[in-house]
Amino acid sequence: MKNIITQFSRLFVGVLFIISGLIKLNDPVGFSYKLTEYFSEPVFNVPFLEPLALGLAIFLVVLEVVLGVMLLVGYRVKMTIWALLLLIIFFTFLTFYSAYFDVVKDCGCFGDALHLTPWQSFTKDVVLLFFILILFFNLKLIKPLFSTSKTNVAVYLSVILCAFMAFWVLNHNPIKDFRPYKVGTNIEKGMEIPEGAPKSVVEMIFIYKVNGIEKEFTEKDLMNIPEGAIFVDRKDKVISEGYVPPIHDFSMTKDDSDYKEELLKEPKLLIFVTYDLKLSKKDGMEKLEKLNQQAKTKNYKVIGMTASGADEIAKAKKQYNLNFDFYFCDATTLKTIERANPSIVVLQKGIVIQKLHYNDIEDIKL
Image 1: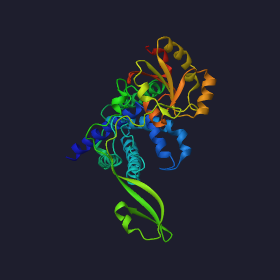
Image 2: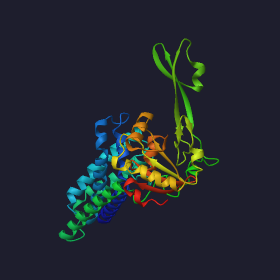
Image 3: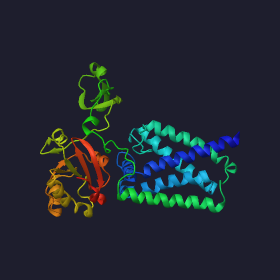
Image 4: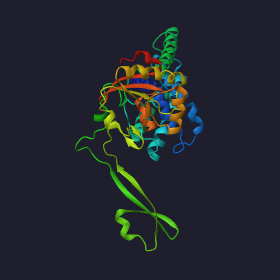
């Protein structure tokens, strides 16, 4: 019986680590954004790690896949189990911190393929920790599946394949797009809230200074506020989240006006997405104007979308001789639309027809 439980734990942990790792390896840039969120001031306040986020993301997801393979084939069992145990303790701490302090809404454990709440993520890690502890206390029951040479080949091959996959998706697009702006998506429909969808329940909290001490009062307590109390602030406490459409915070703003309704009706719209012009890749930016001219000869309306300010836009237009207008959109939304900076998106009446990394600009079909 002990052997059956151990082998089930081995299979369960190994397969889950491989699946979770491959999903994030499909989109390491997206996982790096999640790490950056953890490194930010409101969470762990270690901003000096933010430039290392992408490298750390790639290392962690490759490690996750390879450890899963090592466990399944029985490669250096003691080292593998120790590595899995340390990794899951680290992840469990992160997810508990996120859930308890409500600082990161989605841990990114399964990328954009499956969104888990912080407490769901923590529960998942506790379950994994339980099964890894079973493996830890039954090391002697975990035997290699193959000969030493074949086991070594399986592990080395997994490292090579993971490295190649990481290189490919970084220089092109994710192999499988799980994001809300994937090809075939109708952006306008993605922003709709279905009739009867649950709405957020929000409680207003009023902060008053009473005898020099700040105290919080709900709406029900307003009649009990002591005379002479001084109003300080008001904040909204979310009791329960309502329905959030897959596409939100999407805008196409220029000169303080949002043109998304007008632009999403365009039969031929080509968009250059660059969330931060200061961080845009030079070799990618140098390709945009040529495509702009080609697209205009085929009656495309061409625009740029960025979260950069007017000064950066003017600087980029001059530096790369760009002859199209830029529209403002939230940086997080633009990062969700496309991972490359810059990238190309083609819309037809609000429907995503094509999405391309700037390295694949020659593959565009106009």
